[in-house]
Image 1 (cartoon, rainbow, N blue to C red):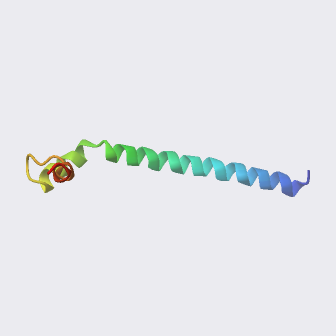
Image 2 (cartoon, rainbow, N blue to C red):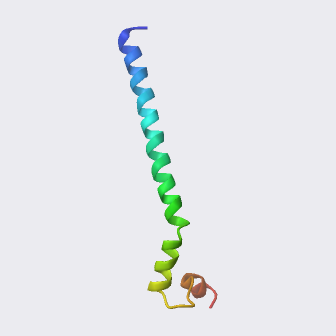
Image 3 (cartoon, rainbow, N blue to C red):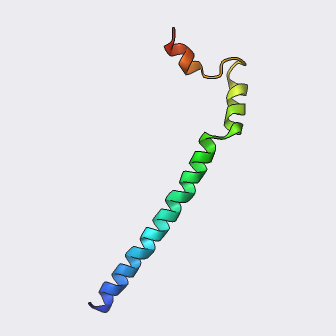
Length: 61
């Protein structure tokens, strides 16, 4: 193996690590947002009280 091959593999390794950290960080943020009580509070404000999920009410005509 040449020196350039070693550098290429090292660069791929660093890219994989940074990509996995990026995916983990934003996956955790997205999961927190989806399960957040703050989001339910905003739904309660923007929809009328009692309309928890209006899209379900529309499908059940």
